[in-house]
Image (cartoon, rainbow, N blue to C red; front, side, top):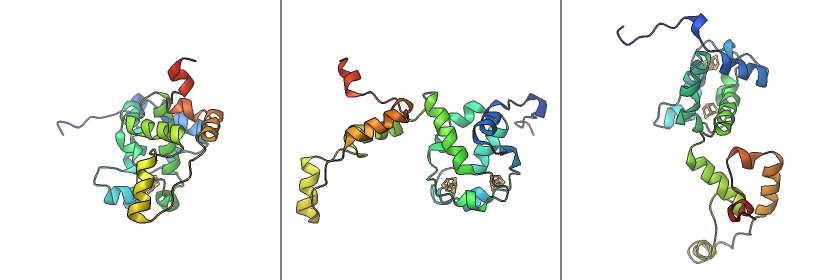
Length: 179
Ligand code: SF4
Ligand code: SF4
């Protein structure tokens, strides 16, 4: 009992949970912590880390904003929606996790690996640049055709429209050169 902390409901910071209810029009407090989501989750089962959608929802309900938003585990959900299909309370854990990531990204606590991948997609149109070397390996080793060059310009324009570029703190080429 020494390390256990008693939390009074009246002391809870409900602002994060209320943000969800306001923005997503469903009641997060309907979750009764049955654990069906975590029991169904492939990441929790095979990920080798302590990933648990049930725990994430609990932390939001307890108002531990920092612990949730700075939790690297929120970036592991694959969006397979198994938990959402099985939740008896229709709580929608994957939508909650996506919303958490959006808040975290807006507050600049997106892990650099994800902002780097986003920057690659907006720069090259792909998660990784495919150049001459990669195409040569495709051709000589795997007898595969060259990959077409993706239209990264259009991708950047689309990203600008939905402000994805700002969300992932992408620097446009003209911002880099100061033009
Ligand atoms: S989100 Fe649904 S499945 Fe997961 S613990 Fe809460 S009620 Fe159970
Ligand atoms: S949507 Fe995310 S949290 Fe839900 S089961 Fe799939 S990986 Fe797990």
